[in-house]
Every structure is written in structure tokens, then in C-alpha cells.
Length: 455
Image (cartoon, rainbow, N blue to C red; front, side, top):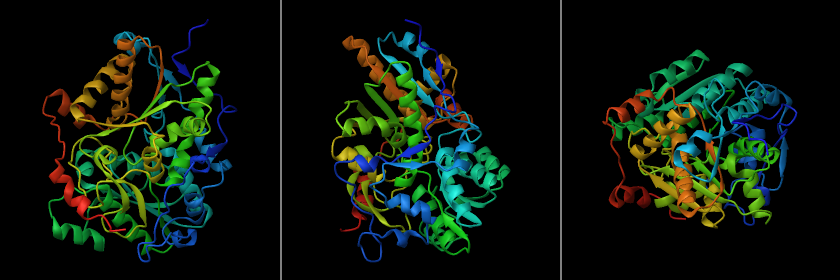
């Protein structure tokens, strides 16, 4: 049998032309989002002041299995998609494992991450609606960069509220966003009412995604011709990111492989949800039984230590409430290098799958261990991974070692969400042995749990 190539890249004709809506096959639906004023299930039209209308419809649709990808979105996708599925031969050899290790590499675009898959879609729908600008938040900067690129392509203005800790750690991310025409503000800021209120409570705060979301929504709802868009967590985002898993499945079918284990990094859920989508469909329909593993930072352990409860998606408590695994909307994570994996909650879809046992495992890991495996992977596979992706790398390596110890020849698939070229401050910290691990105590987490809405 011929050796499987290092990189399997589909042709444009083989690339999926539809997104897959995982909710349509779920045995039980996630609990509905609630209107924060009435605490009743939110209606689609109640989302129109915040989201584009088509995106609001996608957000609440739990019956449509597949959505056609619009031609202008496909056209831009084809500048960087299909993305490669790679066999990690050198890593396998180093680990002396019988496992086959594959990774879906999403860093082959200017934004450097998978985030562009949803940014292109959301910017397109905004342009179609006749809007003139968008607002958003960004943590590590990948989402803000991707959306800036998409907005430049479709001729939309963009305000990005960037978590202050990352804003200070990653000045070049800000420069890239500005290159594409975005206005970038460190959050919390004095440009919004909610930002000023947060700063009044804690002038030295390093911010959080929850803070930045509050500011972005306030800006959107007070600016004519503007709407808010989000890069993770939401149902619509997981829908757009399903392109990752759909391509992965087609590529693996072409080489006669199917994953026994699927590993993804877990922050808000965009990459993990997109990667597992078609394989989770197989599990839900009884066609296969892959083992799914979510790996999150020990500093922000929403799945492993959070509560499954209704909570606000933002610190200012203006968003609809979602039932998810959460640390509380007021949780402020340590300003470490876990990058975009610092959101206080997890996608309601993934939370429901985890709660019901379909998402098999969640693991939390300290950042020094993550960077140890990031450095190992980069030296063996010649790709410098983003810190977020390195969580998935760590999980895949641990599984490959278990295969070696048990003598099991399994196929492992993980998501490499993007590159780490804007994360050199973090790599330097690790290499110079100044990086520290932070794991919140139960006492640290309790205030967030105490602030959860009593529903």
C-alpha cells in the first residue's frame, strides 16, 4: 500500500459547498437562550437589534441540517481553502507510537487562524443587509484580525474591542487589524458606558472577553447601520466552522482513515465545534463511535470546573442568557498566554453535548506543559502553533503515548487552529523559564458562581 502523503489537500471541486448544522441531529436540543428582560425564550426577531437578520435566523435554527454557502463566501474561501490535513509522521516517530496522528491545519491564511471561516460569512451577511459597519471583541487577536480582513474585503467599517491583557502582550496583532482598516480599542475602555463602569470598579483590570463583548454590543446598538458579531460560542459560528470537520472527513475518507479519537482546544467552542461536527453526527446517528476530547487551560476551566447553568455571555449583563458551562460572567482570567481560550463560558451546543455524554472528555492543563509540547511539535513538524492550538497538541500527544503503552493502533485527529507568530512574547517567556502556571482555587471561582442568575 502506498504511503499516505504528509499533506492531503482536497481540490476546489471536493470542498464542501454547505455548512452542517449539528443541532439538527442532536437527540435533545440545548436549552433556549433567554431574553434578559423577560427571562423567556428569545424570539429570532428579538436578536435583530444586535445581529444581522440572516445570522439571527441561523442562530435559532435547530431543524435545517445543511445551509448552502453563498457564492461570494465560497469565492473568498477558495483563496485559502481547502486547508491541508497533515499526517504528523515525525511526531509519531519521536513518540514511538503505533497511533496515526493527523492534524487539520487552519493557519494558511493572512489572519493566521480558523477564525476567517466565520468572519467571511458574517461580514457577507452584514453587507447583504446594507449595513455599513460592525463591532466585535477579540481576546488573543485572531478573531479581530480575521474580521478586519473580511470587513476590508466587503467594504465595512469595524471597531474591535481587544482584551487589555492581550492588547498589551500582542501589539503587532493590533497593527495587522489596523492594516486592514479596523479601529482597535483596549478593553475595558472609557469609550463606552459599560467600560467606564468596569474601570471605576477596578482601574487596573486586564479585562476579559466578557468585558469586551459588553462594550462591542453597546457600540453596535448605539451606532446607526451597525451590528455586533461574535467569533465563538454562538450556534451560527459553529455552523460556519463546520467546514473544518467536513473537509477533514472527506480527506480522511480519500485515504481510507477514520478517527478513533478527535482532540480540540476549548475556549468558547468555535474550532472544537467545527472540527467534531460531522464525526459527532456519525455518533449521534449510531454510525460510528469516535472519542471526543476537549482540552482547556487550567487557568480558565469552564468545562472541567464550571457550572452548567444559565448565565450572561458578557460582563455587563446585556446579552441574552445561555445555558452553558460557565465560571460566571464576572470571572476575570489571569493575563497568561492561553490566548483566546479565556472566555468564561462554553458554547451551549458543546455544553449540552458534554452534559449528555456525547462529548466524552474535558481536560484542563497548565500552560507550561502546553508550551513544552508546542516547542516539541514545532521542532518536529516545522509549524509554530498558536498557544490555543498547543492545548490540542498536548491532548493528542497524551493519547499517542497511551496508544504506545497499550499497544493500540488508533487514529488520532486534532485541530491546529492557527500559527503562533504573534505569540513570541509567550514563547520567549517559556524559553527563558519566566512562565508561571496559575490555577484558580475554589475560593477564586466562588464569586463568579455566586453571581450566576437564579433561574
